Amino acid sequence: MNIRIGNGYDIHRLVSDRNLILGGIHIPHELGLLGHSDADVLTHAIMDAMLGALSLGDIGHYFPPTDPQWAGADSLVLLTQVHQLIRDQGWKIGNIDSVVVAERPKLKPHISKMRDKLAAVLEVEPNQIGVKATTNEKLGPTGREEGICAYAVVLLVAGD
Image (cartoon, rainbow, N blue to C red; front, side, top):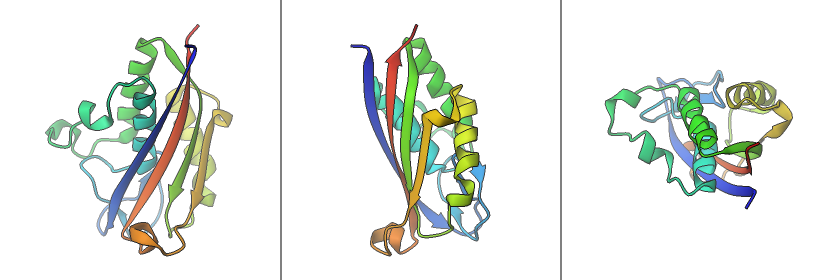
């Protein structure tokens, strides 16, 4: 098989006194995401999709929240490690499509920077990274602004 598809999901609670990091970009907001690392739900969903495409488990297996070395970790550093694991298995990224669900802040002004940052880390063109944003129309935990979640799908292609 020359292609593999994986999907990923992540959600984190919004709290005060934390930075809001999505797709490796700091987004000004009065709340940030709570987590063992920087809690970047977009990057976490992408990593889980990459790992899932090759049946390699999830990010908790590689970066457990019980391990102090990952406390406050930059998720882009973790993404670099997952990307290397994928390449070591003989695969490369065809494309990624993702969506971030958040009532606030408005993410549209930041999407281009997120795509550029993720593309640079993954050594692909920005047009291979889709990032969309939506609200949950005030429904559920994301709609009540209790958290932010992200979904991602990745297409991996057998390397050259």
